[in-house]
Length: 69
Image (tube, rainbow, N blue to C red):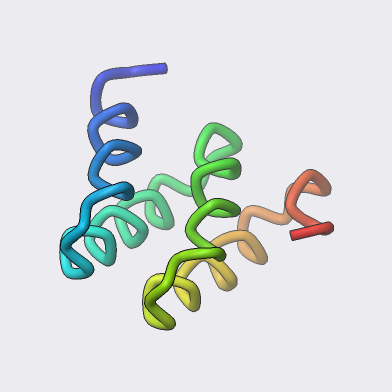
């Protein structure tokens, strides 16, 4: 895992909702298989905005791993 991806995974756990939104949007734009787990985790975020972004991102990536989520 590269350092850039690690950074955004850490930001996704931030207590600041705005930082989590930026992180999940960044992961969405990376749009590769390495981001799937983090996007699935973001589906369970307490903030509805953070939850909505990975829905479309996972649909776009279209990896079968994301189907149960």
